[in-house]
Image 1 (cartoon, rainbow, N blue to C red):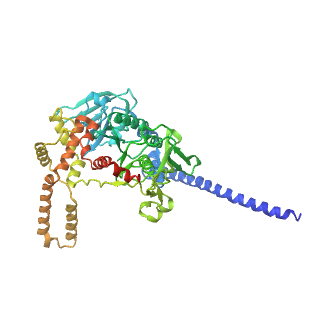
Image 2 (image 1 turned 30 degrees about the vertical axis):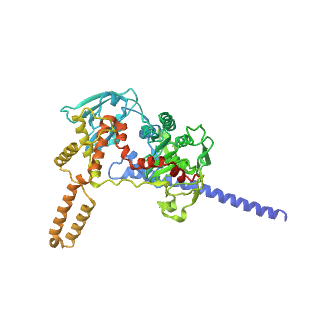
Length: 549
């Protein structure tokens, strides 16, 4: 009996530990059950006793969205109604007519037409104002609702009624929807005799195949250098980022690794295919909107010293999302892991953990870690990817910004299209001084007004003066300043003439040559591309940046 006492103590100790561990797990599930019960009973009481009728679907959705928003911006609930839109985002495919729409004031316009689809073939134009869809007015509808009305199963009919500049009667189009595929590579062409340019705008299904095709075509045209443009590309499918990287990286190299709470997300991804070209000099253009899959590709090129990054610091999204099926054909898009570039960097900019919500890693130097590229160059994690060559972003003058944002440039392009059946090629088309004077005359008739920073500050100062009851004493000075500011504004059309002309040129060319024209109209005035061309024309400097001897 005495010998059994130590055994009994050990047994009781283990039993206590097991109970405590079980209690810890059970307690967690008890809290989940308890809070779900509270939520259910709370909703029942609100539904029964709130003074006005409540919409259960709307109220529950707000609760779900608020809950997920407390985690990070990328964890979202996808309702049954939103499934098609989500699939279109991830696959680049949807059933529709092949147009994009947008608001200018209270009106809804066709803002882009995708080439060779039904809308393009039927004669719908950029700049057409949409009046009705299937007999229903679009007045007061959101662009999201209008876009949804235009989408549908292939081979179903939709009637679109538009108003066009210069036409007294509205125009009706009866169109059969079809499967629309939006290209990941909307443009690829030779910049000069030996430099090819590829614009990669998305990472939906097939992105790597499109980049491969563009690469092969450019090399056949004589490309000895490549510019890969992933500016303004906010990412997409992880698998496509891996395969796009593989275009320039040998088979068998680690592209990215992921780490998450679930064991299935702790893994490394390697390049599995034969590359297109592992030696051709490469410049990757990045900016502050380049994110996620774009940052994976750019990070791989930097870590392996495979290409030079040119532009501005990237967004800093080092998180990976996956979708999980839920009841009633709904889904949860949830952040499942963080990703790491081949050197071990995680470029996530913001810490979304409960204890440090919204903390910026790039603002805290002590949290940054250094990592070495293949050639020994020092890079840091947190805060996105830093370009090897920084090019300052172009600052748009307030007058130009307002002309674009308020739709004046867009509307004038519609007028120009009505008055001119055709134009020269996008690269040759220029806004003449005569045409610019016509634009200024038209602007005057529109009573165009815009706010400038100095004007806003003067208004604030004027309000303060009135509150302090000293305005009457300095009223004349204020009026003189306002007159001077008005004169400066009038002079802005001459001061920023080239900038405004460039915006007009870009918008007008798109009326005739669509996406391709929109790009070609300004590609040779792009400072990032100019810097890339300059670098690729200096082989010694290119290799020096990459740490190559």
